[in-house]
Amino acid sequence: MFQSTKESGEPVVGLFRCGDGYLAEFASLPEAPVCGQLELSGDFRRGRLFACGSPAAQTFAVNNAMMLLFAFASAPFRALEMHASVVTHGGRGFLFLGRSGTGKSTHSGLWLKYIPGTELLNDDNPVLRVVDGETRVYGSPWSGKTHCYKAQDVPVGAIVRLRQAPENHIERLNVVGAYASVMASCSGYRPIRMIADAQHETLSAVAQQVPCFQLDCLPDEAAARLCQETVDG
Image (tube, rainbow, N blue to C red; front, top):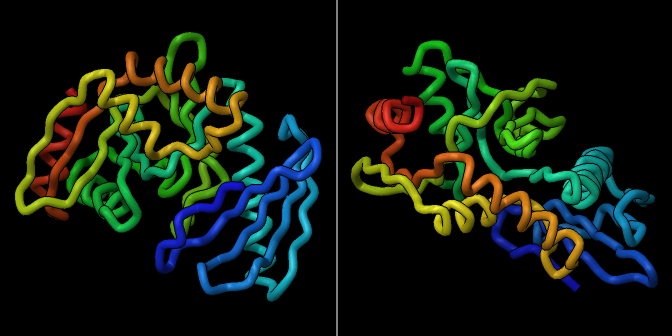
């Protein structure tokens, strides 16, 4: 049995072994009732959802069921569903990772405001995929509270993990640090070996191919310019 961390204001997902498959349950908040149950086949190719509650709760259940099913089923195809905000600039994508509340969307907004030629690709759940030896980032149907639903993809220029700090500082991560940084922000259930092995293969390729950085920052113009000048060279 797996259950996501019950952080205040965050949705809760539970995953249970059920016969030859799995059962996932969704609640919009830790204190909210379960509003969706998703029956999953053992290979995650098929699912059947039972949604209940208000129209908003049912919409939440459908949305999260689709995200979970996609993340699990796509893992063997060298795809990672990320919790990140991503912008494009100069024909490449730049992903900003971090814990909830770190300021991923804020940092994307700073690029949009101060870095000419920047566009938002996705603000919550982009998809990374290694295709023919190249790491690309894709828009997805899930962009959080931001209405940015683009069926576009670009090569990844860099991945940046954000951390709030009293001053701006950026440094490049080594391969091990890059692997850990990206892994912490990708969706999946690693106790399931099929998913864990597939994600490890993809993460290893991404960590070796894509420059990854740690940005300690303030939510200001200087942070955006320091980041862009460092990673978009």
